[in-house]
Image 1 (cartoon, rainbow, N blue to C red):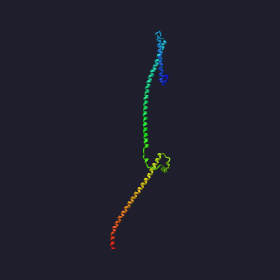
Image 2 (cartoon, rainbow, N blue to C red):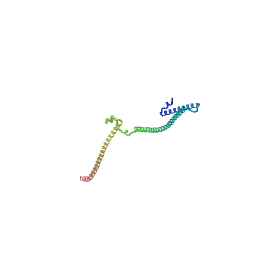
Image 3 (cartoon, one colour):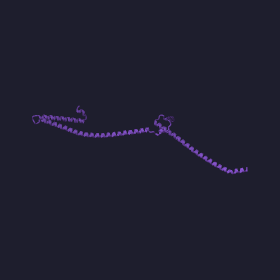
Image 4 (spheres, one colour):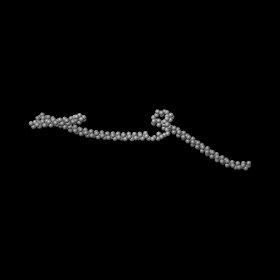
Length: 213
């Protein structure tokens, strides 16, 4: 598998192409130099000089492109590192936020479970059975559990308010009867006292009649 098939990035492919081209220029220069060294004449022909000069210029241009590509790649690596660091910070932030969501979810589930298992006081109220309640108020037959419980509690409250009113009325009547009985007792006590006073006052008359008759 060739390196061009492995490298897919366009920038790296251009660098790879420039390096291959520079290598070919170097090989051509070496071959041309070796061929020129074995000629009997020490003076290079003009066409050979022209070829060497052209190859050197092309090689310098390729090397310049490679150096520029190297600088660009360094800047690209730095920018990539910076982007990677920022992305890692964002991932860490999101991960921490996700963990907080998990903790909050677990806490809320615990609170919901505690509320569902809590022994509410309304569950201990001596409410009438559901069947009996529906006989009294059949309009709640299709109500859900929450609405039905609310209606039963409201019904119980209304019944207890009626019973409380009756209790207050009976208590008022009791107080009136107690007050009336006390008045009668006081009247009887006063009558007894008057009667004793009358008897004491009549004793001389009774003694007089006993002497005469």
